[in-house]
Image (cartoon, rainbow, N blue to C red; front, side):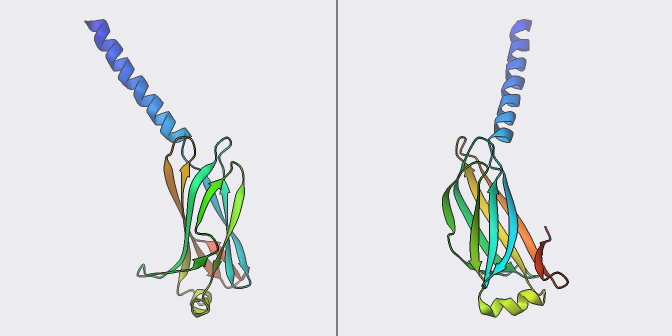
Length: 145
């Protein structure tokens, strides 16, 4: 009877460790980078950091966010991207409406980039968020969070 209990406890611990390893290894890993502004469009580069697996159903949202968490969304050239291969990147272009440009340069609002993707093998999803603020000294958008 003792051996049965030890085997049962060992099996539960082993399956827990394997499940935890599965969750950690098989989730999407991304990097969000600011590519600057070109012709009134905020350029965002999404890089898939996975070595062996692609990311599927990549969704991106770019908006302004102010102090009271009110958002105004930008039009993006492609809000959904079906497949992002391993170690590859994709640049998304978000059109900045003219009425927001002055608020951005006066630092009344920040730009929030929100990305959601699913791992191609496991189906696990993960979301990433990055907030950018305009820096008057350099004239670029710097990552705040």
